[in-house]
Amino acid sequence: MSNRRANPTRDYWRGRQVVYRCYDADEVLLYVGVSGDVCERLAQHRRASTWFKDTARTVLKVYPRRLDASRAELAAIRSERPLHNIRHAPGWVEPRWARRKGA
Figure 1: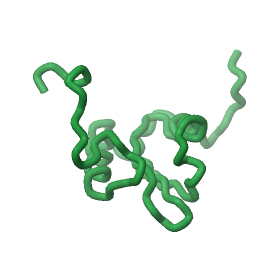
Figure 2: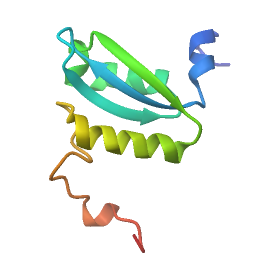
Figure 3: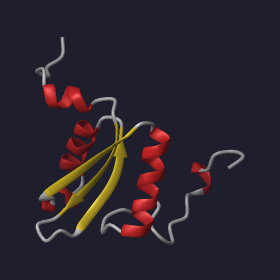
């Protein structure tokens, strides 16, 4: 049996393809991400990301497919330049070991 209690909000968002933007109190964009379980992903940031303590507002946008959400995340990171995104930021190069064959 799970230790988690039923949570209608968490249940609503689970499985939806979401791009999320985290802003600080001065509306500075801290981070852009994508997730199919945005509540769990934000909980992970809360536990492990040093920047998350500065988050004052999070904006969510739902996409019909993961591919659409991933493309939107990539475009947002490249054009909006959030402070704490490393992957996909201008100048970032994917490590050779992480590249897909044929890509």
